Image (cartoon, rainbow, N blue to C red; front, side):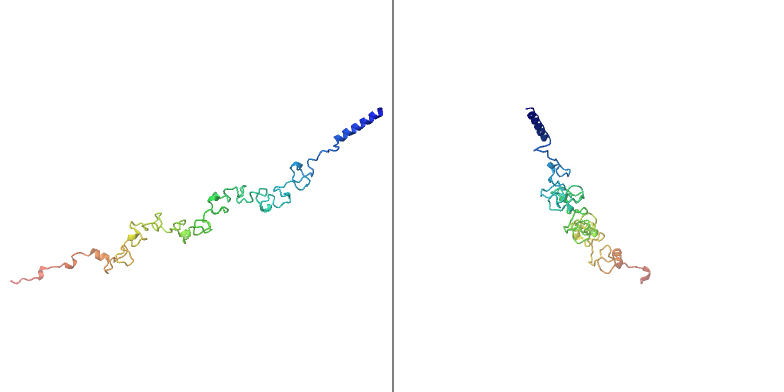
Length: 239
C-alpha cells in the first residue's frame, strides 16, 4: 500500500514538471527568424532576410525593386516608401504632388509657366522659351534690347519718351502738334514743310521754294523798288 502511494507521488511530480517544461503546449519564440523584428510585426516571421513589405505584393522590401509599388524603381524614386510621391524637384523634402512650388523659385506652380524650372516663370509670347532666355519676350520681331515695350507686342517705340507707345500716342514726337497735322510726326523740332521738299521749315533756308532765301525775303524793305534819290542840283530852270 505504501509503495502504491510513493509511485503515485512520483507520477504527480513528473506530470507537474512536464507542465512547467512546456509539455504539449510549449511557449512560442517571439522572434522565430531572429532578425530583430517580433513575429507580430514581421511580414516574414520565418525569413531572417525580410520583415517589411510596404506595397503588400508578397516581396519583401529588401528584395523588391519598387517598395511602394508606384511604378518608379526605388533607385530613381525620391520617396521609395511613399506610393503618392516619387519626385522632389527642389529637394525641399516635399514631393511634387504635394508641393505648391515644385521648383522652389518663389512662384506658385499655378502661376508658373515653367513649374519645374527655377530659372524661368514667365513666357509672355507663349513660344516655349522663358522670358529670361528669350531675346524677344513679346514676339513682335523686335529684340528686347531695342524694344521700348519688351512685354507689349503692340508697341515697340516711344519717340517722345512719355510712356505711351507710338501706336497709341497721338503726338509721337511730343511737339504739341498731333501726328495727323504734323509733317514730321517723329521729329520734335519740325512740324511744317511748306514747299514739300522733305525739309522742315525750321531747317529749310527757302521754305516756299521761290529760289529766294528766307532771310532775304523776310528782311527786304517794303518800298525798296520805289525809292528814288532826287538831287535838285541836276535840274536847271530856264528863265
